[in-house]
Image 1 (tube, helix red, strand yellow):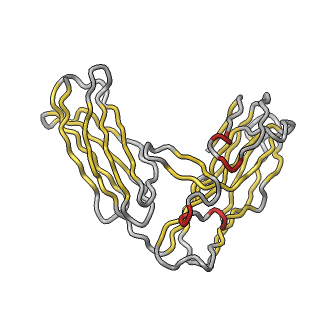
Image 2: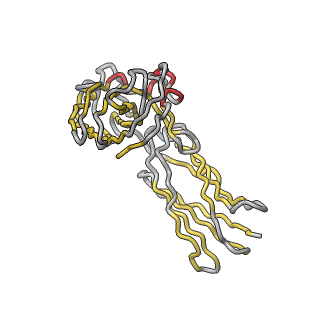
Image 3: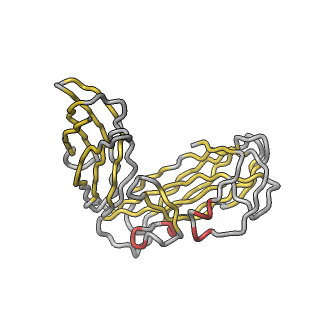
Length: 264
C-alpha cells in the first residue's frame, strides 16, 4: 500500500496509547509498506518471521517509526486502532516484534525489516483466532520529534488450530426515503470462533432481468461481532424489484438472502 500526503494526520486521536504533544509541520511525505496483511497458523510455542518492505517514495528524507497497536473493525466496517491489550484474550500484539522500530530512509530508499510472531507456550491449545499489528508512520527527517505524519497499519492474524467459521444473515431490507436513494441494509453476525473474510455479491432484478450487479465491500468480521452492510441502490426507476445478496465467508455454506424492494 502506498500512502502519501501534504498535511499531517493526527493519528493519536484514534490511538489513545500514543497520545503525544504534536506540532504541525510542512512536508510532502509518501511511503509504501508491504505486506499490510499477514495470516499465520501457528501452535503455542512456535514462531514465524515475515519480511516487511518499507519504501520512501518522496523527494525528502523521512523518519519511519513503528508502534505496536491493537485494532478491530466496527459495525459499520471501519477500522479503529486501540491501545495494546484492548482486544484482551484475542490480542496477539505483545507477541509481535520488529527488527527495527525507528530508522531514516533517504529519497527512493527501501528497507527490509523482520516482523516476528513468537506464540507464547502458555496460549491455550484450543482452536481460536487472535490478531494484532503495528502502526507504521512517516514524517519528514527534520520535522519535530512530536510530529506524526502519514501512517499505514500492518494487520496480523493468527489462528491456533482450526477455529470454526459461521456467519448469520440476521436481517435484510431495502429502505426507500422520499429524498434519499433506496438503500439495502443487511445485518450480519459472526457467531463462529474465527474471524470471517466475506465476499459479497448483490443482484437487483425485475421481471427476471438483472438491473444492477454490485460487489459490495465487506471488511473482516471478528468473532461475536455484528456488521451492518449499507449499499445504496441509486437511479432505480419506480417499481418492484427483487434484491438478492449472497455471502461467501469460507465456511461450509454460502449465505443467500432475498428481499423485495418497492421503489416509489
